[in-house]
Image (cartoon, rainbow, N blue to C red; front, side):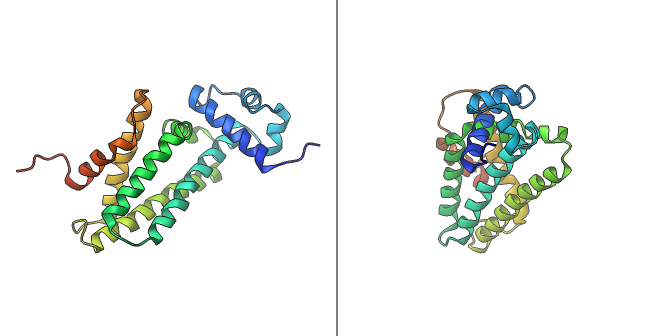
Amino acid sequence: MEKVSNEKRMEILKAAVDLFSERGFERTTVDEIASRANVGKGTIYLYFENKEQIFIAILEAGIQRIIDRMDEILKESGDFRQRLESMLKEHLQFAEDHREFYQVLIKERLNMKLIGDKDAQNRLLEKHHKTHIQLTEFMQIGIDQNQLRKGDPNIFAFAFSGIVSHFCFHWLTEGKDSCLVEQAPVILDLFYNGAGKKE
């Protein structure tokens, strides 16, 4: 019997990310994932029960990386605006470096509604909620440092993540080779100053 290894599991996930981003979740088959990963179909089932479990594992691993990095940022000290800019640029660079994962995360995550694994859905919702809590805590730091106006840090977190998510979505769907990181100043200006005409 083939030995289970983390390296082989990661190869399967990488192949699945590539295929999901190219063809979409529903049109990708386990046979195609096995072929792309250079393993037998039976090997896939040593690691995952079905295609849905592969999809879930991809999302969980990717979101956990975001959570872990945000934990590090929250422990750092220094000026809020400098830290926010650094965090934003790092996030955008990660999106550029892992375009396939972001295509899966942003364009395919609605497929979770089609997956019957309620425990997995709940785990993913908890992770998404965790990222929002982290960003809310960070916004409170901005308020405490008088870098943001007094207000609800929860709303600020929604506003910031909304702007960033839509920029990433636009970048993905445009299909151009533009540099996403170069949009950081525009995103920060929209967040800090809005779109209103300055008097």
